[in-house]
Length: 297
Image (cartoon, rainbow, N blue to C red; front, top):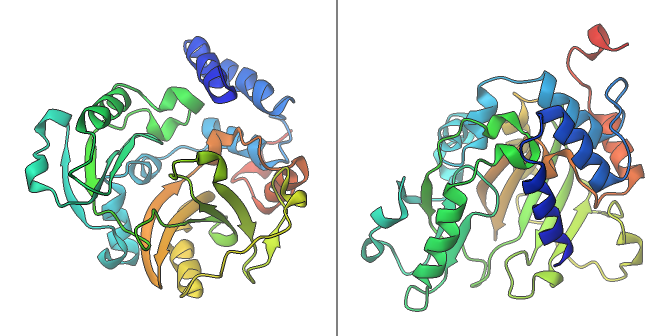
């Protein structure tokens, strides 16, 4: 059993604990320290505080991969949306004969419930059905007790496969603190056959590589080019994050054509063990918690 499988087993075994008990215990297991509820300073701690003290309906709308499309359309325009082929409540309702040769199936309510079809002749429908149906049965809320996922009604959506020379494009994840875009996390090669070769690298807005993850100080050859229309990406992130204290705006950029990916309100559910403690603290200092001055002790 690998580390990820072990953590999944722990999550399942702890599922029926009360929310705050679960969060305290799982945080301790992942980050090897306690949450500071009374005076949170790290980003991970502040994201946990926000889970219990900062809730409003729009959070669930933008966390739903289907309904967020309307939000994005109103904020920045429909041209940034990946074309949608359909949506269904049941996998068996999908008519694959009507779908193009390439497409992406994904669940609207979780992370990882997706199947990528690059060639319909070799696409394993049975494997996709098993994966998607498993995701449809899960309430993603129980993974990290992120309230915005609790009442999302699961469905399947099918989008165009946006290709970067035949490959899944890089994902540009822009961290926005109090509506202001900051660092960019570039995810490269996440869906390659060898997932161990995936790269997760931070850059500042001048496109300087930032050593923010554990192990980054050992990297010697970081070679990811600054995307075209980068300033437009920052402006999009600013508009899409302005209604939230913290948001990570995920975008794709195919030779200057920008596509919206998703809005994430608490990356890694606030249990991110990959960033260094110095990074965690630095990110936390950038985030002003709402109403904090009125309630902190």
